[in-house]
Length: 166
Length: 218
Image (cartoon, rainbow over all chains, first blue to last red; front, side, top):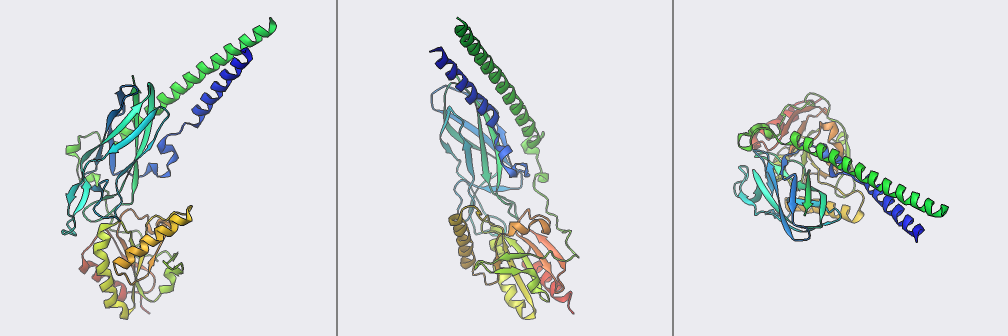
């Protein structure tokens, strides 16, 4: 019985150690992480939610002045939508993410086109359920920005939020 | 009795290791959070968003380091899988035009390029469209889909000049293509005589084409 207890404890220890060693942040695994960002994740760094209950976490972003990015539902299929890619840690479930509706925008170079874009600050609403404890949620916002004359290749902005479930 | 002691020691050691792991994990997470804070401090300007200005917009350097130098040669595939080199066009004036299917200003420029090519082809002018669209190199099925999407774009825009794929692979020798469209005007001797980033008006395109046609001839 005691021997069995020992093996169980040793097993738990090994799993814990492996988790500690293998923990990797989003920007550590993404070669493009050092790219110059055109969209910034503003806040929150930390959020407290009710343990085991569905909660909404608002993620605030800002598009650099003079730029726009396609909304989650661009007006044309060929345009790259804004998406949030989430690495769900154990104990946190992301049910869905609400994206705001895009603003209609007609570029000066093509006034007849009506694009669906985000400019300035915008907010994503993530529906999460977290088990009791502290969780580090890492995600990446994929977006494709343009200004009045040019478009920039798609980029991913790192997002990290410490979710405390009580 | 000895066996009981041994088991007890092992249990205590296991517990101690678990505590140590927990502390190490906690310290690690603290360090990561600190790193994150530093990173966000770097990313978010100290000034309020309302006072941010055009400095946030990436600068478009209109003067390419390549101007006056030989255009870096490249070999890329066209949509039929045939290899095409810039060197094949020596003696012609060539507009090397970096574009992508998701680039709205490129769609405005493309019809101009088609017409200008028609207009000046007889004088020895060619356009090479260089697609920078992502190509999945690990998944054959996705790769085929990526190419099909580019082909669909080419067909829908009625592009009749060569469009080459995997343009990202030649981005570095061309100074890094940060924004689209980016165009390099190459004269008959293979020298870059002008470069533009972003959408420019048709007249400027035409002036650069004329310049390329007039330069580098035998």
